[in-house]
Each structure stands twice: as structure tokens, then as C-alpha cells.
Image 1: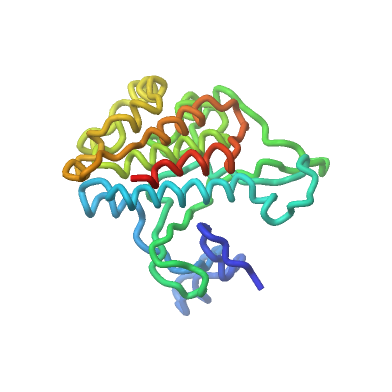
Image 2: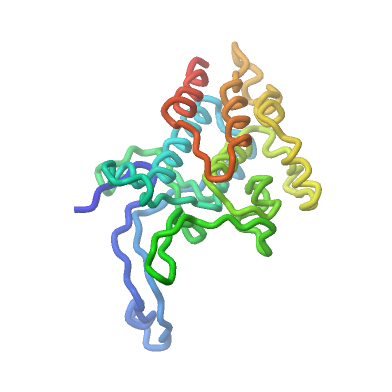
Length: 270
């Protein structure tokens, strides 16, 4: 029996090479498709942001941050969860490579019996990459780094400065994108967007290179909705986490138990 994984959609079935005519009982269409059947999705974070026209309440934002980093911990260390005794040299983990608000959806139904309403799921693994592959000789090889790539992978507003500079996406870049998603869910949104009109790519890249944790999370004005609270939100722990992620080397990973999990705990003192 398949296990329901917290933060990852449950996949009911994968149908390979099914004709659309058979799938829809339509005698007109005859197109060959691969069909993936998942649990129902709820509203996406991006849509939630557009509906409210403002950032999330800070308490909700804190819970969101906790869930997002928990999902990334699982994704980047998936082999450790399922195969804890495997040799680390052959472990295969995943890099999502296209983290945006629209890739996170809120659970709306509990058909599996193991979900909590309001929890988030990370979806759309179309650009995801396994960190180890088999070459033409059948040998296991690490993902190869390619600088000055001809094609940028991911969504421009949310990819890291490294990927935007045409580096190969890594764990580091997923985590930086998660921080961009969190900033987008505040009242101010990302620094390189203004009333939904985005700056030119060259200027955006320069802004990302100049962005540190303080400029991303250190300004209390990003929490206008909390202006009447008895206490201004303190995001100093996220400031430190973003600086940690940004300064990682390619394919380095932070210590999730020591650095990330403990790093977001001060947020819960609000």
C-alpha cells in the first residue's frame, strides 16, 4: 500500500500511452497521452495572494514557512527517508527547479485520511531533476554542473541569481526560491515587482545579486497588515536563513535539523 507523504501529492495512478478517445469515450479524438491521476488540489498560493490583494496574516505566514522548508527537506533528502541505510554515494534525491507560489497548493479535502485541511502540497515536477543518473554505460553519475547554459530553467521572478546567471540549478537555488515565495506572500511582494509590472531581466538579476536577508525580510513595512498589532513581526531568523542559503556553494545542503528547523523557531515567538 502506498504511503501518503506530507507535503507531496498522492498519485493514484499513472496511465501510459492512453488514447484520449478511450479516456473520454469520445469517438472523434484519437490522441495518445500519458495520464497522471492525483488527489484533488486546492487553491494555489499565488491565487490566494491575488484574491486577498495583500500578504498573509503573520501567523499563517509562519506556519507556511515551516511547511515549505519541511517539504524541501524531504525532497532534497528523499533517499534518506525511504532508504536510510543506503550508501550516500548512490542516494538519489530531487531538485524541483521551478519553485513559485503557483507550485504550492492548499489541501482542500482529506480523501486519504492522512491530510490536515489547510496544509500545503508541492506540485508540478515537470522540470525536477534527479541528482544522480545513469550514463550510456549504465554507471551512476552525479548531476553535471554546466555554467553559461543556453537556456534558463524555471520562472524568472523566482529563480535565484545563480540560475538567472545561467548556472545549473541545485539544492541551494530551490531554497532561495522558497525565500522568494515567502517574500511574495507578504504585503509588499518581491522587490523586483511593482504593481504586477516586472523589471527588465538585466535589472532583476542585478537586484537579486544585491539582495541579502535584511533587504528581503528585515523591513517591517512588508507587514502593513500587522501595523496595528501589539508587536511588530520579527523576521530576523528568516534574514539569517536567506543569507545562509545564498552563501551555499553549488550542490551544498544546509543542516536542516540544526540550521533550518531551529532557524525558524524564533518566528513562533510572535
